[in-house]
Length: 142
Image (cartoon, rainbow, N blue to C red):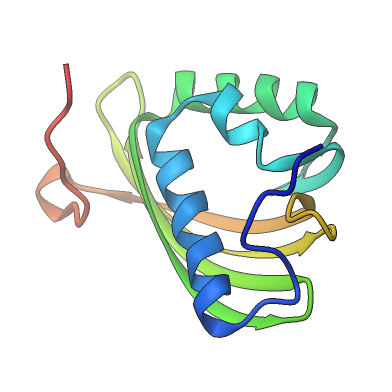
Protein backbone atom coordinates (compact mmCIF):
# COMPACT_ATOMS: atom_id res chain seq x y z
CA UNK A 1 0.00 0.00 0.00
CA UNK A 2 1.21 3.48 -0.84
CA UNK A 3 1.28 6.05 1.96
CA UNK A 4 -1.92 8.08 2.35
CA UNK A 5 -0.80 11.46 3.70
CA UNK A 6 -0.99 13.14 6.03
CA UNK A 7 0.70 10.52 8.15
CA UNK A 8 0.79 10.12 11.92
CA UNK A 9 1.90 11.39 14.31
CA UNK A 10 -0.61 14.17 13.65
CA UNK A 11 -0.25 17.86 14.26
CA UNK A 12 -3.31 20.08 14.55
CA UNK A 13 -2.90 21.03 10.89
CA UNK A 14 -2.55 17.45 9.61
CA UNK A 15 -5.39 16.21 11.82
CA UNK A 16 -7.64 18.91 10.33
CA UNK A 17 -6.55 17.79 6.85
CA UNK A 18 -7.56 14.17 7.64
CA UNK A 19 -10.94 15.33 8.97
CA UNK A 20 -11.60 17.47 5.88
CA UNK A 21 -10.59 14.65 3.55
CA UNK A 22 -13.02 12.31 5.34
CA UNK A 23 -15.83 14.86 5.15
CA UNK A 24 -15.23 15.40 1.43
CA UNK A 25 -15.15 11.67 0.67
CA UNK A 26 -18.30 10.86 2.66
CA UNK A 27 -20.19 13.76 1.05
CA UNK A 28 -19.33 12.35 -2.38
CA UNK A 29 -21.37 9.26 -1.31
CA UNK A 30 -19.10 6.93 -3.26
CA UNK A 31 -18.55 3.75 -1.20
CA UNK A 32 -15.52 2.68 -3.26
CA UNK A 33 -13.81 6.06 -2.75
CA UNK A 34 -14.57 6.13 0.97
CA UNK A 35 -13.30 2.58 1.49
CA UNK A 36 -9.88 3.47 0.07
CA UNK A 37 -9.11 5.49 3.23
CA UNK A 38 -9.28 2.34 5.40
CA UNK A 39 -6.94 -0.61 5.88
CA UNK A 40 -7.91 -3.88 4.21
CA UNK A 41 -8.66 -5.29 7.68
CA UNK A 42 -10.32 -2.17 9.12
CA UNK A 43 -12.52 -2.56 12.19
CA UNK A 44 -15.63 -0.44 12.65
CA UNK A 45 -18.41 -0.01 15.12
CA UNK A 46 -21.14 2.14 13.65
CA UNK A 47 -24.01 2.49 16.10
CA UNK A 48 -24.71 -1.17 16.97
CA UNK A 49 -23.27 -2.64 13.75
CA UNK A 50 -19.79 -4.11 13.53
CA UNK A 51 -18.01 -3.95 10.17
CA UNK A 52 -14.73 -5.68 9.34
CA UNK A 53 -12.68 -5.12 6.20
CA UNK A 54 -13.07 -2.91 3.15
CA UNK A 55 -15.59 -5.19 1.43
CA UNK A 56 -17.96 -4.88 4.39
CA UNK A 57 -17.35 -1.12 4.50
CA UNK A 58 -18.49 -0.86 0.88
CA UNK A 59 -21.59 -3.01 1.54
CA UNK A 60 -22.41 -0.97 4.66
CA UNK A 61 -22.12 2.35 2.81
CA UNK A 62 -24.18 1.12 -0.14
CA UNK A 63 -27.00 0.18 2.27
CA UNK A 64 -26.61 3.42 4.21
CA UNK A 65 -26.91 5.73 1.22
CA UNK A 66 -29.87 3.81 -0.21
CA UNK A 67 -31.74 4.64 3.04
CA UNK A 68 -30.22 8.03 3.84
CA UNK A 69 -31.11 10.13 0.81
CA UNK A 70 -29.53 13.52 -0.02
CA UNK A 71 -27.00 12.87 2.74
CA UNK A 72 -24.88 15.88 3.75
CA UNK A 73 -22.19 15.72 6.46
CA UNK A 74 -20.11 18.19 8.46
CA UNK A 75 -17.17 16.92 10.60
CA UNK A 76 -15.21 18.86 13.22
CA UNK A 77 -11.87 17.97 14.80
CA UNK A 78 -12.38 17.36 18.50
CA UNK A 79 -8.96 16.07 19.62
CA UNK A 80 -5.86 14.30 18.33
CA UNK A 81 -2.74 12.59 19.61
CA UNK A 82 -0.15 10.39 17.92
CA UNK A 83 -2.03 8.19 15.45
CA UNK A 84 -5.54 8.93 16.79
CA UNK A 85 -8.16 11.54 15.94
CA UNK A 86 -11.53 12.21 17.57
CA UNK A 87 -14.25 14.06 15.67
CA UNK A 88 -17.77 15.27 16.30
CA UNK A 89 -20.16 15.44 13.40
CA UNK A 90 -23.64 16.25 12.22
CA UNK A 91 -25.32 15.06 9.07
CA UNK A 92 -28.73 15.39 7.50
CA UNK A 93 -30.69 13.12 5.23
CA UNK A 94 -34.24 12.15 4.42
CA UNK A 95 -35.84 8.77 4.05
CA UNK A 96 -37.95 7.59 1.13
CA UNK A 97 -41.10 9.03 2.75
CA UNK A 98 -39.54 12.53 2.73
CA UNK A 99 -38.94 12.73 6.51
CA UNK A 100 -35.74 14.65 7.25
CA UNK A 101 -33.33 13.75 10.04
CA UNK A 102 -30.25 15.26 11.63
CA UNK A 103 -27.75 12.84 13.09
CA UNK A 104 -25.29 13.85 15.79
CA UNK A 105 -22.28 11.82 16.74
CA UNK A 106 -18.69 11.23 17.70
CA UNK A 107 -16.05 9.10 16.04
CA UNK A 108 -12.74 7.81 17.31
CA UNK A 109 -10.21 7.00 14.61
CA UNK A 110 -6.92 5.09 14.76
CA UNK A 111 -4.50 5.12 11.82
CA UNK A 112 -1.65 2.85 10.79
CA UNK A 113 1.80 4.26 10.00
CA UNK A 114 0.91 4.63 6.29
CA UNK A 115 -2.03 6.94 7.08
CA UNK A 116 -4.90 4.46 6.56
CA UNK A 117 -7.63 4.28 9.16
CA UNK A 118 -7.49 0.93 10.93
CA UNK A 119 -10.22 1.50 13.52
CA UNK A 120 -13.36 3.64 13.45
CA UNK A 121 -15.79 3.71 16.36
CA UNK A 122 -18.93 5.82 15.86
CA UNK A 123 -21.73 6.69 18.27
CA UNK A 124 -24.70 8.35 16.55
CA UNK A 125 -28.15 9.66 17.47
CA UNK A 126 -30.86 10.75 15.00
CA UNK A 127 -33.45 13.47 15.48
CA UNK A 128 -36.40 13.96 13.14
CA UNK A 129 -36.48 17.51 11.77
CA UNK A 130 -38.66 19.54 9.45
CA UNK A 131 -37.22 20.28 6.02
CA UNK A 132 -37.36 24.00 6.81
CA UNK A 133 -35.04 23.40 9.81
CA UNK A 134 -32.23 21.89 7.75
CA UNK A 135 -28.74 23.36 8.26
CA UNK A 136 -26.88 21.76 5.37
CA UNK A 137 -28.00 22.66 1.88
CA UNK A 138 -26.14 22.41 -1.37
CA UNK A 139 -26.88 22.35 -5.05
CA UNK A 140 -27.08 18.90 -6.51
CA UNK A 141 -24.55 18.35 -9.30
CA UNK A 142 -25.90 16.70 -12.43
